[in-house]
Image 1: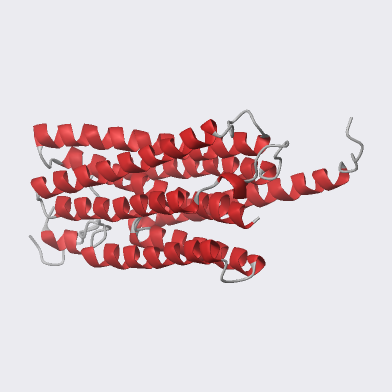
Image 2: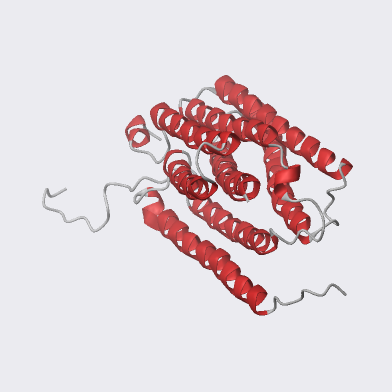
Amino acid sequence: MAAEAPSFYVLEEEHHEPGGATLLGFWIYLMSDALIFATLFATYGVLSSAYAGGPSPREIFELPLVALNTGLLLVSSITYGFAMIAMHDGKLRGTQAWLVVTGLLGIGFVGVELYEFGNLIAEGATPQTSAFLSAFFTLVATHGLHVTFGIIWIGVMLVQLNQRGLIGENERRLTCLSMFWHFLDVVWIGVFTFVYLLGVLR
Amino acid sequence: MSDATHAQANHGSRRTYLIGFLLSVVLTALPFWLVMTSALPNQTTAIVIVIFAVIQILVHTVCFLHVNTRAEGGWTLLAYIFTAVMVLIVISGSLWIMYHLGTNMMPMDSPT
């Protein structure tokens, strides 16, 4: 072949994550999910002082419980990060172990949240009490529901990893789940700041 | 995939995750501490914790979600910025409109 033969194609492949367009598509889904949360935050913001004679945030929010929950979710973010690092190192056992830890932290988070909801409802602060509480339960429970589905997804990935190991498809799925999980943590930053901390300040 | 492509791949190293985690711990703990101890006047605390929340969201985006100008040819970043603008418009727009609506509709002092 002649040395000066021109090449009309890009020799250096751009870097693509395994899964190609799937990851970008999943990212777009997360962004649309962010818009759902934006509307729920807006609803909460508008209704946050419509107590209708019911309790105010300061009377019912227990910050130590929220701090515990925030800690659980924050730690679960980094343990998922370690799972991803183990995955890229090709360590199947390490990936599974970190996923289990992440899942348990997630279960702890949902458990504490349900305990908090249980307490609120026992005190009579139910979603039916006031517009503030309706908006509060809708926003926080939607986030909690996302975390619950994240935990189910982690369980499914553990089974798939067990059956097929670290194949390309599983790496793609784990990368999507990684984005999902970290995205939920970002939403939680909004929840604990705007709902709980600012609520108690009010 | 070869190790060479992996090295420049779009996922975090242990270091980015640890930096992100340490920053978020500080950015989470301080607001909780400020609110629970009432160390500052309420108004100042409110401003500080909102600023901290914005910084923490950015830290998570960069360190955990690995959004940068190179990932997916910049499309994730573009979608992210677009969404951020939409989120801001939806939230601030709703609050703005409903606040004024509430003010204009207010006088209802006689409970019926």
